Image: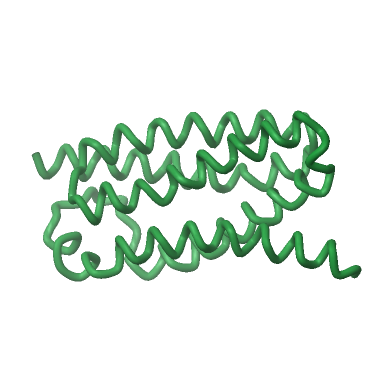
Length: 159
């Protein structure tokens, strides 16, 4: 593999994992304290599942981003798609800050709905450029859909 291609793949994956790192910094201190004290629905996954799930999702997101980026930044559709992807990535990190950092269940629920819309925009815009890139985001939208239901349920149980 040529160095330029490898560096784009690595950068794409690292960018996505960096967003995850921001989220985990906001999350980690509150998992065994504040989050543990909340009422949760019966379908709440065990805490150990979140790390491997997000690690996988951020990697898939990075590969997806690479598949679009490799089509060239001179392409206006590629630029637009990468901007939309960047917005959803920032929203992804923001959710953890709102939910765990600020402990604001309502605002984090509203924000995750906006995130969901931007993930869908990313999927649709990526699909025009690379069907594989769009399909790699499907597990992500499914997980965030579940997370939105979980966020809503936790909010309702702890009002």
